[in-house]
Length: 301
Image 1 (tube, one colour):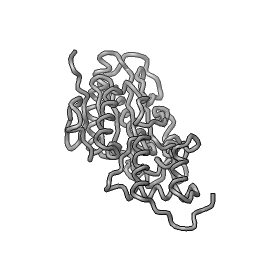
Image 2 (tube, rainbow, N blue to C red; image 1 turned 180 degrees about the vertical axis):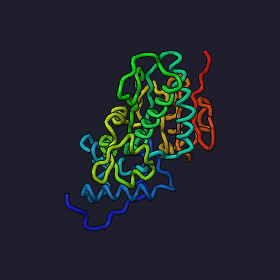
Image 3 (cartoon, rainbow, N blue to C red; image 1 turned 30 degrees about the horizontal axis):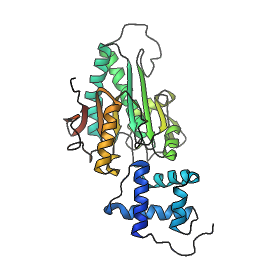
Image 4 (cartoon, helix red, strand yellow; image 1 turned 30 degrees about the vertical axis):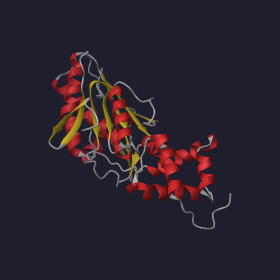
């Protein structure tokens, strides 16, 4: 197809068609306040696809051959803003209270598996932050409550018999590839202090690469939160700054999915501007030193 010779304008009706398609695909909802953003991103994809009419582009999106372009459009609608150690107050709550509770209870019942899902992981800084905090917490716990057995040297990042798994998912293949690479520039490392850089990164030229032992704890995969095929049996789920893309109905459905994906007594951590209040009675809010989390409520049968 030839490149359009004149500017393409989307009518309100055409924009509503796109809104419905995107909502059905991934649950993202673009109300009147964000319609200009949707319009801008759709026009960008339309030009890059060398389409000269909205009709031809829409027909591509709903066709079997257009699945890749639909993925491309959805990727362009997500703002993949993230950083290491983001929202310190919440991470302190996770590190010093939630992890301590989980590790202590699991050791008491001899369950040595920790599973924490980073939903909407973007370029990987969040799940790698979680991995570093778990490694710290296990090392500290091992000093106070050592598990009898043979001591190996050098000490492994995750002491035996503990096992750590961090599923990290996103709807964007491009950010997942960045996360899998695990290499970050100085700007991306701004919030990582010297001790963490020394312990968990290797300097490679002007960039920093996660050490192999940390990378092996994180498993990146594509997941669409609109579907039911999501990681189960999680002790904690991080889903920060994702629900803000959804309308209230989709938020309620997502919270219900998270409830089912958590183990009994598990925790859900959402963005600082997001809340479960008024959306569900299946979680109890935990608040400490400006950090907020939600604990799954167990209903007696």
